View 1 (cartoon, rainbow, N blue to C red):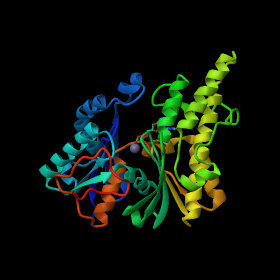
View 2 (cartoon, rainbow, N blue to C red):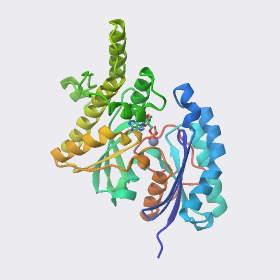
View 3 (cartoon, rainbow, N blue to C red):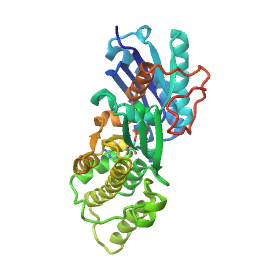
View 4 (cartoon, helix red, strand yellow):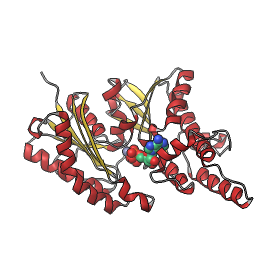
Length: 349
Ligand code: KG4
Ligand code: ZN
């Protein structure tokens, strides 16, 4: 018997993503991004994102069906991001998903965007381990999670207390005169720089912080330190090397992320670490994660960069998993939630 064909819709921020999977095989991953419309504002403008989703939604669904070689009538269930995210943007996806599920008379799963960032790894690296630590690092979130039982049970271990890791990349890029979103530009610039040129602070790593914020992150102090360092250099008439600042800043972020992720694995006796979210596309994070996991005897799982940033395949992958596990679908009147705890993997009311 054929495995279920699932269509996933993602509209939580500025990417209109439509993915199609059969079982855990990826058939299509169509993404339309409005990022260029936000660039001149230096951040995502929610109303602009919502309007772009309205325009991109149907063409992106059509493109995904074409790529996968399927028709909407073949789809067995729809999955959609129910939260967290920008509420106006989410509503375009949830309204579309409700209309499709009702017209096609098929089950609908409203799922958690964050769980999608972790479960997408199954499309490339096979079933999730029974227990794993997940580190989710994106423009809106930086969290360490304990993931049990195939992502049915997700417990937060820690999160950022101020900026998300991606937000820190975006803000520092702006200070350095690099375009938005800054993560990929810092990554690129850092390749030409010296990561040991400047030792920037590692937030929440002091011994006192180990007690109060063992698995939490803070990037706002780092952001201030970088801005202050640049101002001081300029005031002293010294040239500022953008690649050196980018590389040193990136090293500080990645070092803290990996220290805490490895500690979470070791403290909980967990042998698998899964990275997800846009910042997991960072080349230095991917290299350091592999080195430190190898040294600690931890198995690392990281999706390919395209599946780390927001996409519909991750939502389809999570929907497919829920269908195969026999989990009940969401009611058609589920709410769209800008804030959704990471422990709620699927909305049941
Ligand atoms: O997961 P994502 O696409 O959207 C959210 O859910 O937020 O993550 C977007 C974030 C942005 O802040 C972007 O600058 C960052 O991920 N990002 C990166 C890289 N690629 C994307 N940060 C560092 N290095 C990268 N290569
Ligand atoms: Zn995301």
